[in-house]
Image (cartoon, rainbow, N blue to C red; front, side, top):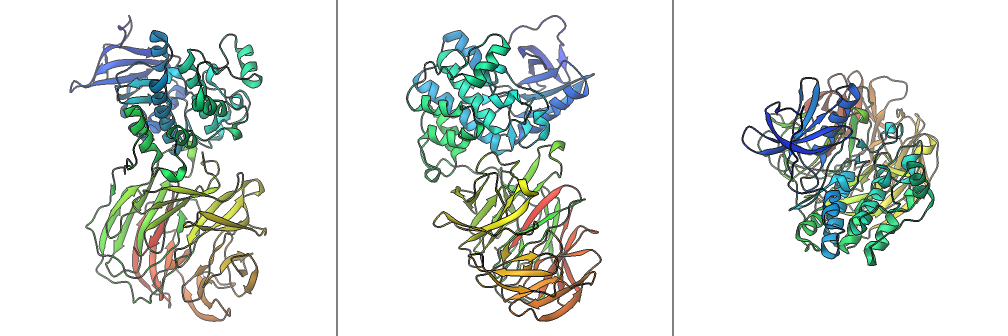
Amino acid sequence: MAAAVQPGDPARIGAYVVRGRLGAGGQGVVYLAQAPGGRPVAVKVLRAADEEAAALLRREAEVLPRMAAFCTAQVLEVGAAGAEPYVVSEFIEGPTLQQAVAARGPLRGRELHRLAVGTATALAAIHRAGVVHRDFKPGNVLLSPEGPRVIDFGIARPVGDAGAGDEVAGTPPYMAPEQFRPRAAGAAADVFAWGATMVFAASGAPPFGAGPLPALVHRIMRAEPDLGGLDGDLRELVAACLAKDPARRPAAREVLLRLLGRTPSAVSDPLAAGSAAARAGGPAPEGTARLAAPIKAGGKAGGKARGWVAGAVTSVAALVAVALTLLYVAARQGPPAAGTRTVVVPELGATLHEHPRDPLRLTSFLRGSTDLSEGLAFAAGVRLPGEDTFLPVTERMAPVISPGGDRVAYVHESPDLAVENAGAVRFTARDLTGAFWVDVVEPPLALRRPSWSPDGSRLLVSVWDPRLDDRTTGFAVVDPARRTASVVSAPAPGKEDYVWASGDTLARASGTGEITVHSPAGAVLRTLGGVRQPAGTVPVFSADGRLATLCPGAEDRACVLDAATGRRLTTLPLPAGGVLWFWYGTDHLAVYSAASSAVRAVDLTGDPVRTLAEFATGGAWTVHWAAR
């Protein structure tokens, strides 16, 4: 419960009447307050109103909305009372773990298991949102009637934020060894803190004790942990989490699955299962997966498009170059129909112009900031077939729809953002259920540019090495049905990626004047000249064996070639600065214009037929068109 207010405490903070104190720390004071409608709320007020303190508050306000509701208190308002910034969140009844153990001793049996599952679920959700907490400890775990909640994200950082290593942050008895070194601490440090917190919950003391900081740091760096009252499987799991080497610790998602007694393939949504188990105090039954509230686009639902396609189209607006990829179309289509309707997707910042007879339409997206230090917010969605509803994707991964429209593939294209499964491909059903991972490479190698084969049975990904200036080192073909991957090492200079070509072949730009065509085993089958493929882009193939590329030595002019022979079939003008995106049916190309931030369909004479989509400027976005 709240303590009494103290002399000097405010009677009101903005519109909220102060009723008591919930806690105080180095950053400020947390008050129990009453909202105008009578609802109890928690109001955190910072003591120091300098820019650094305000930045901490803004960071907490950014981080908390990314968390699932079962994870933490939800942010209601951010404001300032005079010179003191504050954040208002929902009030959660219950003591902290620190207070509960001090009042009635260590936890045992079912209660300890419920705590372990609930906090591991919260930590997995935090990491899935791309955040490292950095101060996970007993004082930041609330024991609510609905299960444990994790609080106080004031020093949380986005995964991969280089600034995270500039200062030592955290509470020493629960800090991982790497947090005392001049380097960025990642998600593994949170796992270490989780293990230390479980030891405290079971024994009343952290695993390396307390006392003077130099001696404590020495024990954390060198000594074995005292696991106290832990036993059985939980003792073994916590010991793994307290490994000195962060690479040897399990990821939070793996911790949760081990606590649930499940394998990755045995549970479709570990977070939903963990949340149910934490509330009930035992393992959750199957079938507890939940979908988040859908993102609803403006406009009425239209008919299904004809034909099928697969692939991804990646672009970055505002100072970030547009990248290209491959998209397949099976059936010949006439010109895109006029008389379109408008569909607005606010989360993407896009306005779509669609007609039921269109061969393709935008089916998935990822939008975020080009600079992670500016904020953690992002939006990603997968469109339900035949509808204008996008189901929100909670991981910062770009979804790619299969040709049949029933499956979705995702990869972590930046190893700095991947808190787990950095070298794996994630697959789900179209409704985002039934998730599983297929391991492909071991970090620090990473994956990018996923694209489905024409028949939808395999996924192609390029393998790259961040240690070699992001150079492409080969590719992998993933079979989701068998859950296997075949990796081919084909080192070559440059950052160009692999895409599906015609038939059962792959292709990659070789410099700016050649494109090499490969077998799935990596052998070079032929080389196509007479092309101009800008650095960092990929060739654009149609399903019937044609290649669209820029003409050699000619600005704003595209060439269409026979991919088998290299013979030029036609030449067409492009708008100034226009970039080839994909084949829009067999007789049209989609061309992106940075000047207007729009993508248009043009015929093979270069005449524009229709605007397909307009995008807001600023930020980074990845979009994918498909027929279903």
